[in-house]
Length: 159
Image (cartoon, rainbow, N blue to C red; front, top):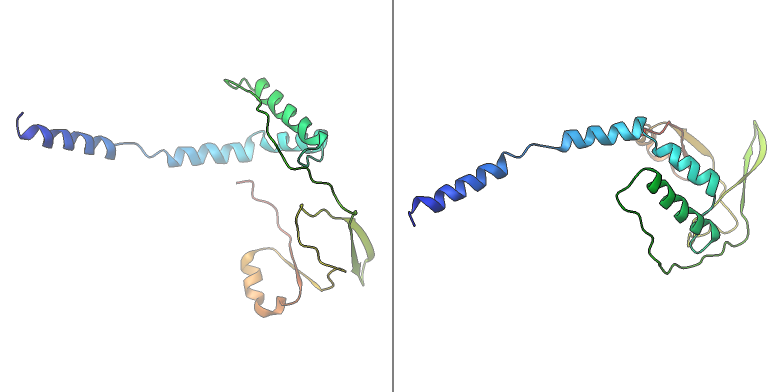
């Protein structure tokens, strides 16, 4: 075998690996397009409004699995199958309600929901609320936010 053959082979392999196109911009464009103009939020709306709560082991969780499989079939996925799985079953404790007191607007009660295993607040939290629109705005406030509840009030960027 000629000595130049391994060098030629190495050069060919190296040049092919470096000549691969950069797909990242195309993938980012597809991702952004789907998030801003796709159906994902409508699908999520259907799941949450038509199926509702989906706690592990609940009838809602089983209905969500069926809903997902039916959706994938309707979108003509190549193959859709369900596999049996063991899941823990969580039972919600006592219903919780938050009380928001405002000198200007009075007292309002709102439903709250903590995720299973969340640490409770005991008798509750009482503190002033500071509204911010960005992380930068929060940073500018510095220590003025100590002991306060921070309320981020900004639209969600779908991307």
